[in-house]
Amino acid sequence: MELNKYIRQLIEEKERLDAVIATLERLLSENAELAPKSRRGRKHMSPAERREVSRRMKEYWESRRKEIKRS
Image 1: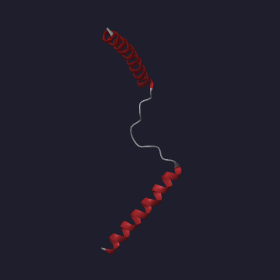
Image 2: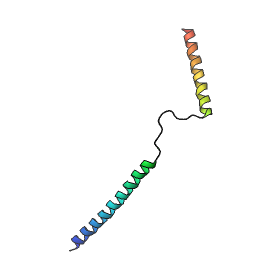
Image 3: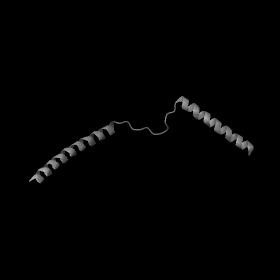
Image 4: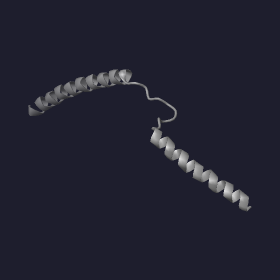
């Protein structure tokens, strides 16, 4: 009967897929162990970024001092 043939083919294909999935999961877990852990904390700022932040903060505090003098 053809139906038994198709069932057998599907079972064989499922077994192949299970083997491929297991291999991929193993590779994924190995890569996860080798991958460097992400660093926590502040991101690194270049000197140009630091200057820009400094400029913005100076403007901010200058405007705050002016508001306080007006009060």
